[in-house]
Length: 71
Length: 461
Image (cartoon, rainbow over all chains, first blue to last red):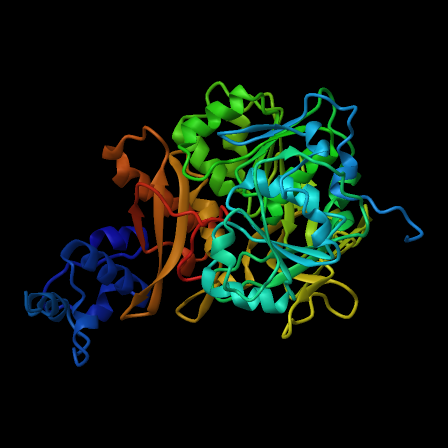
């Protein structure tokens, strides 16, 4: 996230689980980039795999979306 | 006899000009002797007034057969080597084909065309074919899907740019091209060699690039053409060393500044020109000042019978070199009511030059915004370590789609620097492109696919 924030010239607040994604300053493009790069690194995209995946609201939700994908 | 003298290809092969040859990797044929020879076993008279499908595997024999058939047949359809066999019947029907010239007669026994003439390596002819008529030259468009369109030209139109340019200066040129001569770009070079009193060295499918370049060098090639993708591959291969052509020509794709600069550096003695041509519109113009794009004053004026205008962002050409029509039952109109052909190539005025930004049909949609992949590639290719790139869209659960770029690094590039290079490319893109055009993901790849027509393969275009 820090790398993308630098590229997108976003000032990133300190990250913790309760931080809402809205407050990260990331726009939809920045999230799209994050999801694409994580898919390249991890081989999964939890938001495409699951049709009913709720869109995460906080950084913690976002991380859990990846943790909960069946291996 | 028409009031004006009709010149066929054979009429440009003067017996006085000795030492002219056409060669591939296996054979060298004299362009002087060919006037006394036949590769159709003296059967060209049977093709008089016929609509001929020229389906010969190799380029050399195809070129010789073209000179024998032109001026005899009513029309001649050139089959490129990668023609999809599923499309053959539709093409035969649409072009009204009633004769086939082929080096593989058994393959054509069951397509319902009764006159099949075998093409064989040339032997001494018993009679010289006479020029009877202006044969229609039919060529296929190189689109990616569906049955290709048939485009009708005359030899006079095909040679328009060659005649306008005049003969090459200095010693007789030896031409070569990375294209196949049964495609518009390659045919132009074959015709330049035949009409301009020169020789021709053909490409050979499957030949390693280093071997090809060694052959070009050994045969003394002075003038050579290819697409920017062909040239990028050559620059990447490191095979260019020692090869010193006088004229290097690019066409068929956008020639960006990076590839022009790369060629200037690799061939310091050569004049480097990029030409604009399409199978439908013919040769529009050539630019020889070493800069990408073309001067704005070329629009609106009539230069050697070529007029250009911009409408809805795309380049339109009205020209004597343009094809006459699409051929076939459901053929659409090739030109608008004023005779202009819409090339589908989108241009943008920057300062006093127009720059090509991409194909109308090649636009990718990024979050509802239209993006030309070529525009992004031109910026990526500026990076000194990049040899070639391809931008494409990738589906994203968040925005619908994002831009990703596949990048081939220059030969010998230090891969440990790839993170730095990635950051530098992103920084260049951010500086020069709108934010939705900046690649979200950059992948370094070994190579990028090039189509049989010599163009960068685009799966999503």
